Image (cartoon, rainbow, N blue to C red; front, top):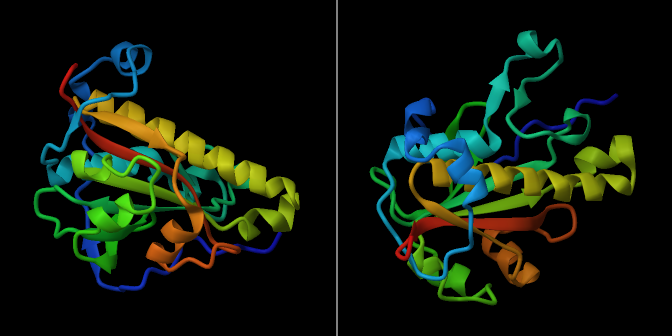
Amino acid sequence: MRQMPLSFSAKSREMLPLPAADPACLDKRTVAESMLERATPNNFVAPRLSLIELATLMHSCAGENRTPEEAQAERAFRVVPSGGAMYPMEVFVHCRNVEGVSPGIYHYDPINHALRIHVEGDQTDAIANTLVQPALPEDTSVHLIFSMLPSRLAIKYGDRGYRFAMMEAGHASQNAIIAARAMGYDAIPIGGYRDEEMEALLGLDGVNHVVGYLTFVGLDQDA
């Protein structure tokens, strides 16, 4: 099987290394509370996340958890399941209110556990303009954007690869939601966005590289 690219090449090559994920961040709620009491909040506020919380969130939804040696494979494995371990998913994160991180859209590099700037500056309004519910970005702190390169799967699975790519986005979003809740925050998954506008914001072609799902992190004022 031909080796596929392991990570998308972000516009910026300058790397912002993240601290190691800290399991201690995930102790604000139990697993049962994080999963069984999950609800979609109607009254978000945007608290300031620490850098270690962001690092833990990113690792929880897309980080590597087994080296090639541990996985007995040609590549490292990640925290979310992926059809054939082909990893068609890429993760962008709009950091709006994170300690030590300038506002902007970053690409997450799971191999180096680092961020690379992709779109500079606060993109809250630009993201809002792509959404069916445009108030959400203003009320939340971190905006995860899960994108897909289905060609990474097509070589093995053909047309079915697109389905597997979307499933992977769902796995990652669920991990992000559980992690956010375990850190004492809340999260909302979002499918109501205008594809072409969101992809244009990220500079994606909308054919070979598409946006699949969004997840925003904030705090439920009514909780």
